[in-house]
View 1 (tube, helix red, strand yellow):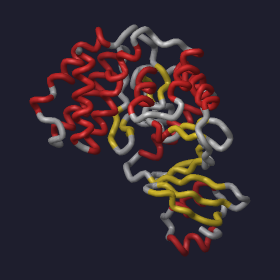
View 2 (cartoon, rainbow, N blue to C red; view 1 turned 30 degrees about the vertical axis):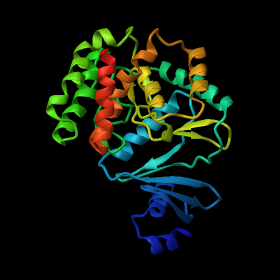
View 3 (cartoon, one colour; view 1 turned 90 degrees about the vertical axis):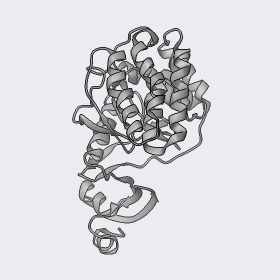
View 4 (cartoon, helix red, strand yellow; view 1 turned 90 degrees about the horizontal axis):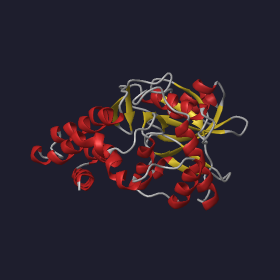
Length: 295
């Protein structure tokens, strides 16, 4: 939109600029696609916002609720939510800078405090969130449980294992290792911990290094879970200054002995999600992680 009326005429009533105008109640002055479902929209007065289209029903609501829940803890930086509609989410734009060791250590301390803010139960959705939510493009059910090993097996690992088999990504004869991990989770999971307030999809692409020198988190699949799951996600695809992040985290909240041996266990969930969405390569990684967890 180059001005609300002009923008609507140029791109139609259901584009990112029109959505930003409706949700913020402010005229807009321009729209810049950022790839995929994202667009940067400039508002009158000089502010820019990020507009995201969620094609799945409820995705915008789930993400907005997750961002607000993370922000409520007051521990990590997240973009302000301006509002959402059925298909659209509008948040502040985060100007990006360069990763730094200082920001990484501060982020580690903030992440530990976020986890310590807690959740009502394993699998609990954010206030105003959804039971039928999403992780990326994959459905994710937020069903609660009191015991992490049983909950993780039933509601995070096995549903995606079955979906991968249904899609032919994992062969029926290959499921035994993952199923055995689920059976042995009570002994493999380490000491019991209370439900943590998780980002839930904490891969490096959802960690923004801001121009202000802080780390910002976007695109959560927030729920109550085990804090080691977020840390395992940071390891999965790598993250700048990961050692400094972990140093800051452990200074604020020491991790249970043997946590590094459990990284693969916590990566089973995201790897199986990726196997369902993106194919065989991730299925092989999930099967390898399961076998290593059993070794």
